[in-house]
Image (cartoon, rainbow over all chains, first blue to last red; front, side, top):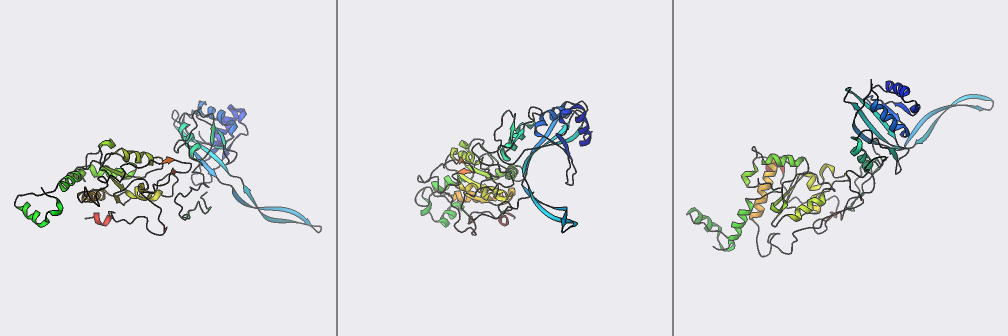
Length: 205
Length: 225
C-alpha cells in the first residue's frame, strides 16, 4: 500500500501534473526505507493528493526533520575510447568531481484511518545558501508547523507559505544554523580550540 | 549570653552536660538557618529527577530541614541548579537568583551545572553556572545520586554554621560590599553577552590546568558510606 512504486502509479493516474517531478529515492542504509523525492514545485499538490486519496488517506504527519548534505567529492572511473596514432583503444581514467551540497526536509506520513505508513517524502532545496527555499506543508498537515520552524531555526531552510516562520529553539538574535554540519560554535573564552571533528573539517556525513 | 569567641568550647560542653546551655546569637542564628534551608523548586534536566528522589521517602531530605521546596524565589534560601543550563535558560536562572532574598546559597548539582558536562561543546549549553552566579557548593556526578545531594546539603549546613555575621571574613549575605544580585546576560548573535561575569569567573590562564580547585566539592567516594 505504501510502497513507493505503488504510490508513484497512483500519482501517475490521479495527478498527471506530477509526472517526472516525483521519483523513488532508494535508501542505501540498512533500514532500506525508500522515499519519494518530490520536486519542491510539486510538493504541495502531491502532499494534498497523498492526504486526500481514498486509498492512501495519509492524514498524519508524525515527523519532519532536516538533513544537511555537504558538498562531496566523488571519484569515478570513466572509460573512453581514444585514438592514438591510428590505434583505437579503451582508456579508463579516474575522474574526481565535486557534487554540490544541499539541504533536505524529510516528512514521515502515516494514515491513522487506514493504519498504514510510513510514507517518506524528501524535499530537496536547491543549495545550502540562505534562504534555501522550500514550500511549507503546514497548510496540509498542521503538525508540521513547529517542526518546520525548528528546521528553519537549526538548518536555515525557509518554508514559503508557513504561517509563522520564526526561530523555535534559539533566540531571534542568534546568527547561523547550528545543526549544519559545517557549523562551529565560536569560542567565547579565548582558549585554544578543542579539536573536535567539526573543527577539523571531518564532519560526519 | 556571650559571644562565641570568648566562650571556651570545653567549658561550654561541660556546662551543657550539666544542663546549662551557653550560646551566642551568631551560632543560634546559624543553627536555625542551617536547619531550615528552603530550596527553590526548579529543575533543568535529569539531575532534577535525582533531586526529587532525594526529597522522597527513601532518602528524605526532610531529615535535614530542606524539604520545603518553594515555588517562589522570594521564599527560597537555596538554589539547587540541577541540570544542564542552556544559554537560553541562563538569564532566567540569574533572574531567579536575583529575586531570592538574602542570605541565599547556590549548589551546582551535576556535571552540566558545574561545567556544561557532556554537552560542554554544544552551541547552546552554558559551561557552568558559576560564570554568572556565586556557587557555594559543587556536587559532581552525572547525575549525582540522592546521597550525594544529601551530603552536599550537610556540607552546606556546616558552611552556614561556620559563618560569621560581622567582622572580617563574614558571610556574603552580611557583607554590604558583596552584591545581592548579578547582571543578567543578554542574548547575542552566537551566545550570551557577556559570556561570563568577570567578577565571578575568569577563563583559566593555563588551559591545561583544572578549571575548578574543587575544594568544596563532594566527591562520590565521600558519599558512599
